[in-house]
Length: 235
Ligand code: 6GU
Image (cartoon, rainbow, N blue to C red; front, side, top):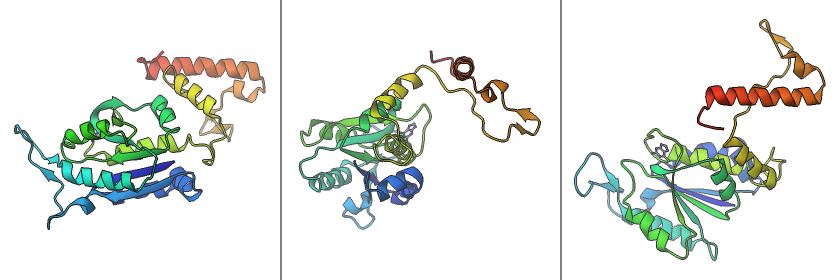
């Protein structure tokens, strides 16, 4: 999979060289590049924003640098059509099913906005372009971040761990889509490892019993109880 990220803070994405995503890049499963939006400006101050038409607070990211940067990316890619992901708090909610879909895409481009967001014509334009595979405006939750970079990190990690050949991903694509369905219904219960007693707290006896049927039933009950308590919106 190819992933490009465009941002005015390319250093924000340096975390992608660590951990699971970093290993997937090293292994060649992901081809990742981060691009500075300001490289697509032509004035002395490398300006990427302007005041909003109609008034209002803050600044809006100008369409021209986005158009130039995204067109250059597209031109570097041959036949393949990329999906343009625009992280924004006004987008559709990102979830495991979406991560699952994206893990089958060949090429994702993340356009990380700052300030009050990107001029709306950028999304409109790339939605009409037949050499792009679509535009998705996506939020990671109901809170407001200062920019799309942290959200892009979240979404890229969720996709990367599903790619075949990524270390620790032994499960099949079929099991992943099952997991996406399960996740929308319930959360997992508590898990334990050694030692059997820690600061006076014991691991539940049933997990030491070796009785696989009872263990499975106990885990189901714990999952249901925790889902009711922590996620009353599910189930
Ligand atoms: Cl994707 N971007 C920003 N700026 N804030 C957010 C978000 C995205 N998702 C939740 N809050």
